[in-house]
Image (cartoon, rainbow, N blue to C red; front, side, top):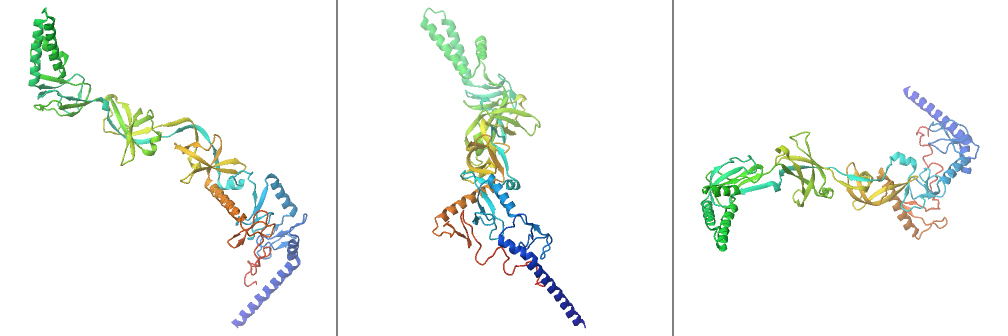
Length: 524
């Protein structure tokens, strides 16, 4: 009983399907297909006739609006031939169309609008105004890919270079105190390193037998001169005077001051010790003098540095050296003094690089009132160099760098873009770069999506090379003898020719077995 019910239901379904298929066939033969045959015969819809078709099944054409009998989609009106021709002719009046091309196969060309072998509408290719190397992009495409342009400017190129530095001594303000005679230190006035000293302040007292002998010789020469200065013999007076001057110079050469010599002359008493004085104000940075130390001639006893001015040494990388010149303003800050800023200038650039770090050393000189800046402190240096007041500038993002050349795209207006090679200079702050040649002020350069334009330009160049090679091919097409080529098994044609689909493929009707892709096996 159950089997009979199943068989009965299957028979009912088959009868219903057959009736539906017969009705569809009758409608297509009497109404829908009649419009399709008329469309195929005429090629286009005559002006004044209103017909409808299915977007998914273009072979369904009818005079009445409704739904597609296959997929159920709403039928859309078919454009009349006059309207289509008028739209194309109006566009051609604005811009001359060279040929029509398939969107998925640029090698498929036609002199007239139509369909490609893949069933897609052909798109027009316009003239570029005769400018070699210029590409044209549709305004809608420009908007969709986000092409932005900016004008070329002329101004001052700036850059901020930040680096670290070290506070060090001003080498011109460092002095040493040494003995020019041998002896022994008997008294120290400065006992510690780092102690501040004033110019003319006593540092040590040295006992030297040679100094005692020199003082005695001076006193003898002095007394002898006093005895003969009134002599009637000029040679005797001159000899005594020369001897006194020689003894005096000997004391001066041993750092005996004029005041000490004057006191020796006045008192006539030989001093056992020689006092050495500080040559200038500063801080003792090195001390080799101790009580009882034997002193040899030329021995360094003290090193004194004046910290009223200091140097700051900074390291800059090799690629930053073109920016660095003497006189560049510099700002120095230190971590231990937040908010405190010191301003100076680059006074010297050392003529060598550090081999391991590939950096050059620069010098910034700063005043140091109160000795706040201490040697070997770390500092932050900010340099603000500038390059000329009139230099051509563009955003760095506008440049396509290939490693061999630098290219920018210049907007020529009306959707035309020209790739242009430029020579670049220094790169400044805020993404600006100096242009040495290739651009002029107020030209518009592309700053976004230029890689898509570069791809289009490269494709255009490749197609030109391909067409040039095709023109030299011995094979010609049957349409006016225009050379043609073959790409991936598909026939291609040059301008002025219209390529037809491959043999056995009829594009105005579906392929065999695909008449009704939406039809289910049950409906077939």
